[in-house]
Amino acid sequence: MGNLLKVLFAITLLGVPLVVISALPRFFELAGSVPATTRQTAETVPAAPAFRLIDATPASTRKFASLDETPPPTLAPPATTATPGATPRPQPTGERVTIGNTGGQGAVLRADPVSGRPLGTLRENQVVDVIERRAVPGSGNWVHVRTNEGLDGWVIGLVALPAR
Image (cartoon, rainbow, N blue to C red; front, side, top):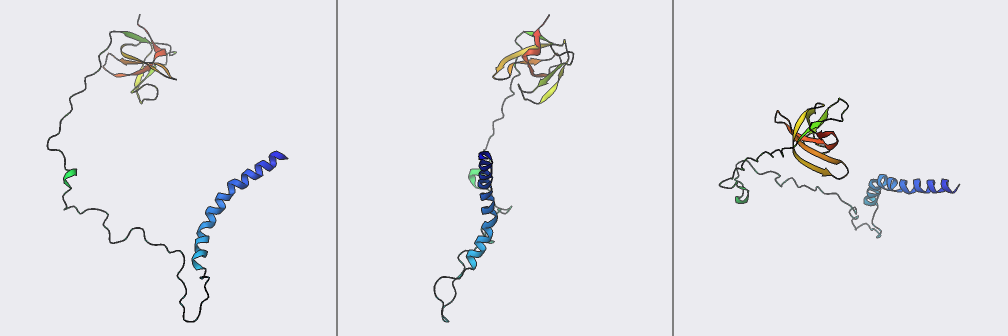
């Protein structure tokens, strides 16, 4: 019985914000329509509603610059732009491994360790060059490899066996 009361109390507490949210617009309508508490005589003008919504974006402001305007000098491109040099490809370490422990299925070659996009598959017993080894916390060891065709990617270390 005590648990039932706790559940009913929790449901009631969760329902209060929903009631407030659904009743709030009606409350603002009522608040704006209630007359002022001062005594009105024939010569007094009734008070304006307590709440009045205004347009947050006036129609007179421009949102976009015209196409003829030149950009401010801070936005102009630099006079000369340096072109970055080509990033050299990482070189193999000289170590070679054979893909195995896959039950004949092969291994997925990924762009990055763990969750990188798949680049292709490596078949069972395929020999590849090792470029780098990396321990990824929670995911084990990963090996950056390059195939004879020049395709680079990462495989989990469990499938990278010493070459025979």
